[in-house]
Length: 344
Image (tube, rainbow, N blue to C red; front, side):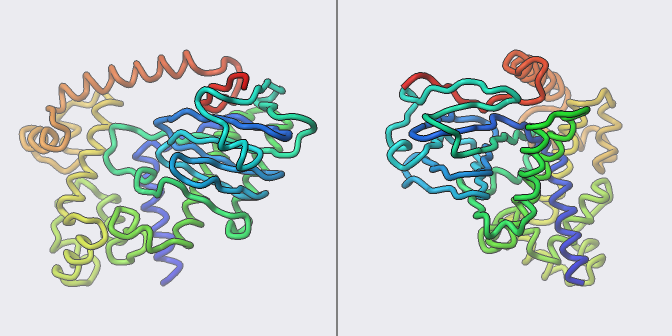
């Protein structure tokens, strides 16, 4: 039973990660000597750093510098501005205006600092689909720090595979890198959820720790078009309606009906933007028997009717794709971290 519950909750997590469009992009591979400071601008994407050798220090606004040891990984879910440095003093003096010099060293590597290389850091970013209201990354704390001794070996193994693929590119390296970066996030979330179950309460993440609510959400995800009610869900789970309502509200912060509507609107928003399906087809796919009822529900959730949303969402998507193409590194599967490093 424990194994079934674990698989079930991870499948629900996989659903949300997929629907919310969480995708990883490998950033810089930092090769650092001594006495260096690296500034990272704020980003709409979550920032990820893995120290594969040596040590480094992380600085966040309003917090004391944090030392990172070999094998440590950190995730900054909100993409807040931050500093990586050789020591606490280097972090303190690094700012948006004051950086260490750096140079490209090939294969996506960035060489920074004085003397021989002492520290290796892999950087990545995780973006998400703004069309989807149900998100995971935005529910995490500002800093997720997994120490090497708590990673269970899985994170270390994947980071090692990433480093090896970067050092020795082969056929379809870009595909391998994209997959490994996405795997890293799932492994990090697994470790964090096991280590900090209390931090997931009173948000969607609490679904992953409650077998009853998790099973209810899994059924909603498996068949969102079904005419679910709290009573039918409770019957499926062999619990009382009152028990399901109470636990659902305590864990998710809303009723089963409200969650069902939110999930349906997430699915509808993606389908409106990404397909040419008629409003009738979209409405039926998410459980509405009439376009009128669907349009009312969608307008309440997204503050605009589905037709207008489709036009504006597609325009915004085209604009984002054009900006990404202009900022990307042509011909390379690796993009440098979103940082603007200048001479100190």
